Structures are given as C-alpha cells and as structure tokens.
Amino acid sequence: MTLETMRTWAEVDLGKLEHNYHALRACAPGSRFVGVVKANAYGHGAVAVGRRLEQLGADYLAVACLHEAAELRQAGISIPILILGVTPPALARQVVELGVTQTVFTMELAQALSQAARDKGVRAKIHIKVDTGMSRLGVLAHDGKAAAGEIARLCAVPHLEAEGIFTHFADADGDEAYTMLQFTRFLDTLRELEENYGRTFALRHCANSAAVLHYPCTHLDMVRPGVALYGHYPDPASQGLDGVGLEPVMTLKSRVSAVRELPAGTPVSYGRTHEMGQGGGRVAVLPIGYADGFQRALSNGVGVYLGGQLRPVVGRVCMDVCMVGLEPGDEVQAGDVAEVFGAHLPVEHLARRAGTISYELLCAVSPRVPRVYR
View 1 (cartoon, rainbow, N blue to C red):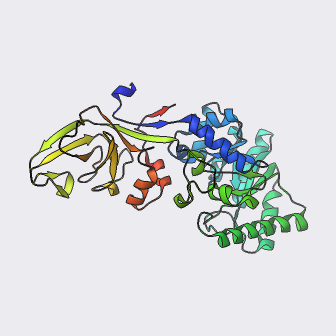
View 2: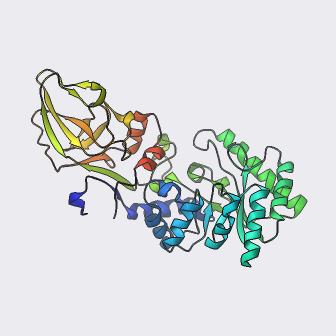
C-alpha cells in the first residue's frame, strides 16, 4: 500500500520525537531517562519509537505488561525494559527469559521470580513500586516505617536484584501540595529503608511528564516522561510557558472518499441528528470513524482541517466513516487530504470537545490505521 492509496493514516515524525527527547533530557541533565512506550507508544508505534530511543541513548524503556515487553525484545531492542504493571506469577519464567525488569510489590510475585531466576542461574532485576497516594498499585506508604519493613522483606528474597524503587504522582499537573505530599512519603520510605535496613537503590524514580517539566526536586536518579515525549503537555494550559518547546509527533490524516450533493431536509448519518438546511448542500465523506479512533463523541460540531479551513463534522460519526460540511463554492473533491489532528488542529482541541484528554485520543488511533514514519 502506498501513501496515495491509504484511506486514513497517521504520520509519525521521528525527528520531532528526537527533539522532544533532547528537550526533556535537558530538563533533568543529571538523571537517567526512561522512554515510556506503553500502549503502543501512546499510539505512535512501540517498535519504531523504541528503536529510535535506543539509538538516541535512552537508558530504559517502560511498558505496561509482559506482552509489550516481548514485542520489543522480538524486534531486537536490547536496552533495559521495565514492566510497570502486574505480571501474573505464573509468567515469571517468561520475564526472566526475556531479561526484562519487573515491577514488584507482592511476595507472591517476588518468590515466583526468585524461583525462575534460580532455575536459569541468574538474578532477576526488579523495581519496587511504592503507593504514595495514587491508590492503584504498590506497597502502601502512608506510613513510611511500615512500608519500609514490607519492602525490605521483598528485597531480601534470594536471586533478585532490587535495582530500583519508584512511585507515581496522581496530580503533578494540577496540585503542587499533593504532589509534594507524595514525594515526601516516598523520601520518608527511602530514609527508613536506609536507616533501619541498610537498603539503598541505584535507581530511584518518580518524575512523570508534569514533574519533569515543573518539579526538578523530584528528578532523582531517573525520569520517565510519557505524553511529553510525544509532544503534548499533561496540562494543556502550561503549553509554551516552560520554555521547553515540545513538538507534537503525530498527525492523523484521512482522504476524502466522496463529495455528495444533498437536497434540503436530507438527514445525515445514524439517528438523523443533522439535517441539510434550506437549499440543501454538500458534504465530504471521510473514511475515518470510531473503529479508527475518531470517537463518536466528536459528532456534530468538531472540525477537521480540509481545503485550507476547519470544517464541521455533520451527523454522527460512524464506525468507518464520518461526514463533514462544505460551503457553496468549495472546491473540495474526492482524493483531497483532511487533517484530523495535527499542526492546524491540535489533538487537545478534539479532546476538549470529546470531554477527555489528549492521551486517550492518541492511544485510540487503532491498529488498522497505518503509521507512516518520517
């Protein structure tokens, strides 16, 4: 398939990825760098992005699950990979065989990894997850002393190398006080571990995108920006205010399938939520729908950039297509290319219209949409 025959595609600019990588490394020059490539690199393509980050000198990649780690290893990516999420103990052997680093916060998984590492004659690298206020996963650390005791027991399991320890901020893009409360809990736990158990870690990390940009005190040994790596600010209101100059990496495009002349009163799409006005009008049919990641919530209002201007979506977004309104005299025709989001129409604009965040729309670009790398 050539670009000229693609119905809908995502252009991924690896040069902009490189720009963002260097800009974020400059924010934390004394820290190692984790490139977060979970969820297919936020929709950008984990293998292509992972390879480029490896070439650029990233210290680690981070994924959500064992399947994502295996995909990178099978593609020949050899740098350290951290699984941020839970892996069932029954799959501990695969973790060890892939040579990836597993997040641990339960004794059951620690012991399963220990057994697998012993059988293979190696030590399995792990990072301990500490829950300082996200209330999702990790050793609960509202009480640093109690958390330290639990973590020390995990670290004492044989055949494991407790290389790192980390936490995750719940509101670093919105609430400084709560972020500092979490950071303090993390530091208290680290202090208890060192003073009472002599336990230290080579890699302490907690800085997500917002913390990399706004809280240098949290950078510690390693930072792990996610959405910022792909050119988007976790809080769109802060865009351009920090001097970093992130550049969006993905542009989503679709090619006009047909231009239709419709008489007055003609309903458009499912549910007849739009009707052609007096005198009728024209619509362009775009082969992109919610199965491609263009959400149904974007029906009737949000635009696409086509023929040099923004044009409204009219009627409901279908599974595979949507329709956009044209003005009299517009020269739009079949084969013309529309920008669904990109330089002329930021994904943040669509996210506001859909009542969500840019992360969701980036990740929603479905596997059937080809990625074209530049």
